[in-house]
Image (cartoon, rainbow, N blue to C red):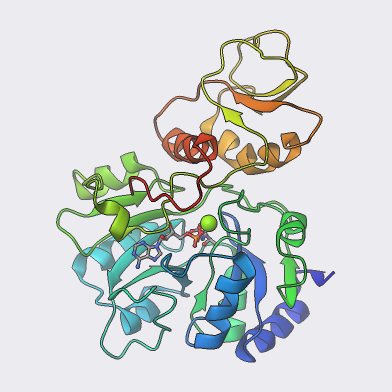
Length: 324
Ligand code: TXA
Ligand code: MG
C-alpha cells in the first residue's frame, strides 16, 4: 500500500513522482485529491482512467497562488479580489484559458475554460512547491462515489492507482470547494462548498443560480454522485426496518434505528460538514437496509451538505446529467 505520512522527505519524493508523470494522492483542506502534473496530457488521462471518470467532466487544477493562476487564465479584477479574500482556501474559480495556457486540454474536458484553486492545506501547498507544476486533482474517489476525507479512504477507493498517498489525517473542512463560474455576468455558483454562498454574496453581491442548461457548463454535476452503496433517504422522521441514521442536532432521534451516528450533536454545520463523508462510509455496511438522514438546515455550509446528500439520494442512473 503506497501510503506514507506527509513529511518533508515524502513530499519531496511525491514532487518527483508528479514530475515523472505519476499520480499522487494528497490532502487538501476540503478532501483528498488524486493529483497529476496538469501540463502532462498522459498523466491527466491516467486520472480519468483511475477514477473511471467520464471524459466530459473537467478537473480542478491546483495552483500555489493568484500570480500563478494569472499565467494560465484570464484573471480579471474580480478574480483578483476574490483570490485576495478567499485564497488560499476552498473556492474554485472557473475562468477563460489563456491562449498560451500550458494546462492539458483534457483537464478542461475540451472547454475553453479552466477551474483553478489555491488550496490552504500546508501539505498541498508544500507539494505544489515540490512539484513546481500546476496539479490537476479531482477528489480521490472512484467517479460517483463518496469523496475521501482520510488517507485510508483513498486506498480503499483507488488501490494502487496512485504511486503514493500522502497521509495527513482527516481533512479539516470535509466537503469540496465551492465552484464559481466567473466567465458569465453575474458570476454563477456551479457547486456549493466550503466557502458559503452567504460569504460570497456579502463580498460580490447577488450570484446567479445555474440555468437548467447549466448542466453543460458544469458537466460534473451529475444527479447521482457522492453515493454510498446503500440507499439513502433524506428528512427522515421515522425508522424503517434495519435502517441506520445520520443524526443532526440536540434533539432525540426517532426510535428504532439499527445504529445512530451524529453529524453534530450540537447542530454545528461546520462540524457536520467535517464528519459527513466519513460517517456515510461508516454506515455503508450490508448489515443495514439503508441510511436515513435527519433534516439539515439549508444555510451556510448546510447548503453544501444538502447538495451532497441530495445527490447521494438520487436515483442511480449514473449518466443522467441534472441541474448544474
Ligand atoms: O475541494 C475540491 O474541489 C476537491 C479538492 C481535491 O480540491 N476537488 C474536487 O474535484 O472536488 P472534482 O473533480 O471532484 O470536482 C470538480 C468539479 C466538478 O463538478 C467539475 O465538473 C467542475 O468542478 N469543473 C471543473 N472544471 C470546470 C470547468 N472548466 N467548468 C465548469 N465546471 C468545472
Ligand atoms: Mg469529486
